[in-house]
Image 1 (tube, rainbow, N blue to C red):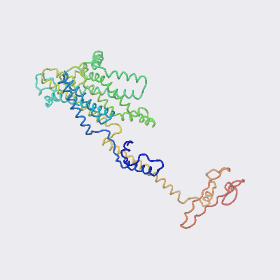
Image 2: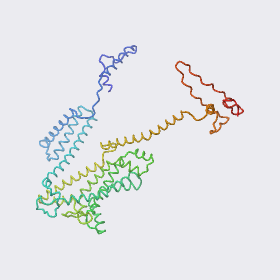
Image 3: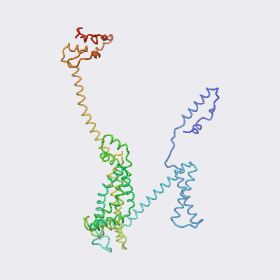
Length: 500
């Protein structure tokens, strides 16, 4: 609440400046202002959200921008082209929206509203492009997808002129799964281990490795295929196979997984690792039980990014695995084909049936990527600090078990202490004289005698509580120094008066 609001809330008849000689009037004016301010409702200011004026400004600016583009392209300027029309309309919309917002808000609010519109527009454009790609692919492949043989047969007995009831992409689906499984088996452990090394062991060599990894993210796929082809097939004499294609795909996936996992591991709070090491845990146990579980969701995202990069590669597969129309389930021998390579060969054919098979294979590839994404998200779970219902129930059961175990461990100890107190409070086996000497401060046979320069501690039995109305009993008079120390001649028994 500002000073202007206070002045607006103050009553009109209240004096603003009271004379110095009239304290009563000043106090009355102050109390009146305080009462007026207290009576004002406490209404919070609305920072964001959709308002009526904001919606009207957006639609009005959009209509005005469209009209400006129509005037420029149709009447005032010799402009043409659909792309230029939409760009001009959008820029005019932003300018008019900024002017309309500036009539009600300050400069900071105007910039905030304009940037909000720009971000929403960019998000909507990307969503529209993704929807168009998916929808167009599924629409063009609608002729091949309803047939069951499309998913169960290969193209060994089907030709370009055969109808869609013959042939399928079973060989390409199996080849893609085998290749990506080999690539993941190589990439996930190596990539995560390298990311942990870059994050946990900083130094000159780790900086060199990080530089190489960042450079490999821009490596062309054909170069990776040529490297595996030269080493595995030409030098070692191996044949083209799905194993060689898996090696080539892993070369493409490895820098993506390392870079993304390194960024995720940097986001783990340092206080967690410091707390683990402060408890005495070694570095490897801290990484395994603290760092990796905390970054599990982000590491799953890193694996997804690498998988999306490798599953769509075509040129490395063509160089290292070859092409075949038959189903081959052995990745170590014989050529093997993947879905992207099958899509390329189907679509380049002039026959409508082959083109429909190509778009159907592309739709299956997108569905396969979606399935892998869902599996990775399920394995990754939620972010750190968030639990699903199953994890919350499991944590609650573990807490109840721990509480029961702690109660069972502590209850016998308390009963033992209480039993010992009751035994000590009972009758003693010592004679009465020994108790008298013990109470008077005489040393026992087991305890060593006190030095002559020290005072032996005294023990006074607690007096019984007085009855109601009786005077409180007075304790025994404190003995003087000579009696406590036994005088200069030695120790003196307080019961008999004899000196020892």
